[in-house]
Length: 248
Image (cartoon, rainbow, N blue to C red; front, side, top):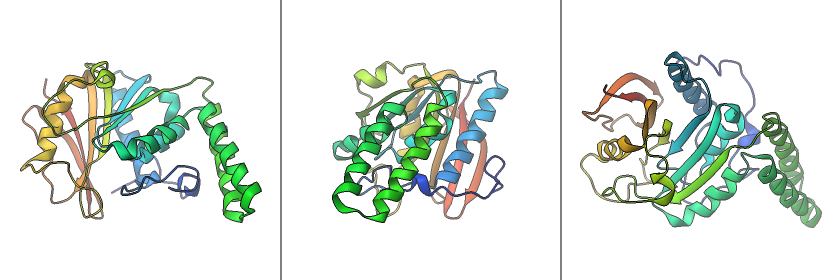
């Protein structure tokens, strides 16, 4: 895959899972460079359709929200709202704590926690984490405004059901970006011959008239739904990234 927006070599270690951002056991951390590239390609599509900022970004399989948080920190100036949902209640506490760091207050709280670890244990890794958090704080402070962040429990491939958080999103989501379950670490909550098709069907009521869906999946998985049109498909290693929009 050609990197159009993250072409310059740089370090992303400040975003490493378990450094400043918290690691949720049993989940995976998505590569930050790739996440930023995918986000910016989706943003370019929205901009071409006249939607240039104030996006609502939603991840229906958020896990510990490492992907959403890294996007929120790097690109929060574009965003009005960031929402994550997951079927596993155990990871949502970590997701909420990570998403809080999209805004200055949450990052400052994390810096205090890391400074306490430095004082208690004196480890160089904790001091390096403080320095990373301070750099990330500088990024989120540049926005001069906060992003609304929320997460909730929801089965993305289950039967459609009500959710106080997600029902407020109906017709409002500009950008869906999700790394769906595959492999041995993370799996779907239920057996289904076409889990991504069910996911897309459940997303339909949430999407704004102008919106884009970016799904990252294993190359063997089918990413298709009759109500959606494929915009493009990219390949990176064992992953495929499929961009879709609702059929008009």
